[in-house]
Image (cartoon, rainbow, N blue to C red; front, side):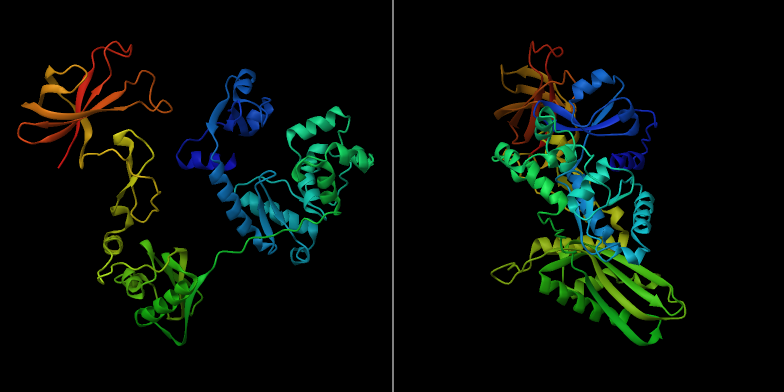
Length: 490
């Protein structure tokens, strides 16, 4: 919820604090509540309940779709950020959004356990995140205390916590409650044999005995932290301070490209940093349209930009780092030894961006939509292009920015116009192909939007046009159908 609120503020849409807001995801029987803000929580909106039921409870509830994939990616980035306290951190995106840190042997660096938790809370608050922290000997106990225990709990007793603190799903919790087992202590007091028979066929993650053993440490549950992303960096340490890094840049690029080649990566973003003798630093950033490990090309990206560096009294350390790198395998461009046209295009984009700035260049990227004018959007040429399969139907090379209405002089039943007028000129149709029906996108079009029937037509002079009829007779969505010209074929 906090990440969504930040995105709203970045767009200039600041919502009042007393407005009940909830994020939803698709459930088995319709949308369900995924997250709520404080106002919605006070109004009784419950996570996991159906949106329809919560709207009846809170008529003023504002609901937006949750970006679960974006939340998961942000959580994994936060897990890497949390390694400032210990090297073993993992994002817990299965049993609830949270972070698990194995701080064994690290708390003394922060002045003790309580000081470490206070430092964590302050650092997360500075990032705009609220948090509930707990410290316990096992993963399961820390998870339970952070969500159901006291604030900033340290090795507290878990017997009084509800059975939901064992990381069980709703059905298992409901079954245990019906059996009168509402707390972890009551569950632990029962004979293990009877519980083992009752949950013999349950999945390990939903078996209360397994979860109980994980909480008490009877079953190990180590923190398996993912590897940190590789760092690609080249340094040049100088015996005496200098004022111009130009002569050292080719060697830095060659060294950096050699490291990238060993890992099978290419640089997308670069940062050249000089460390001055007075303790100050100066940086220049550059970017590539496609991953590259060509030393000559990387050197070119910094041409005419090194003069922006303020040398001060000189600098004795220069670093070149690939701040963003992507996999780049070895490819054979052409059997005849030619040059890859796509590579030349990316180099051209880099040259133009270095000269005029990245904001001066745009490219068309595909969008998952079957409406022609929505099938592409403008984006920065350095942004990654999503892989969307191309449309199988033939499309004109030139589309009008806005379809222009045409005047039909003679029509063919259920077909294109036999003669139409566009921009004060008359065109007689010699042959045609179609129709291709495109229905409205109900999830974003307004109610009453009419469908389109597209036709490829050719006039007597050989000009080919792309027309469409908007609506049908007696479709209940307006008057007579209207005709538009949307594009021209080469």
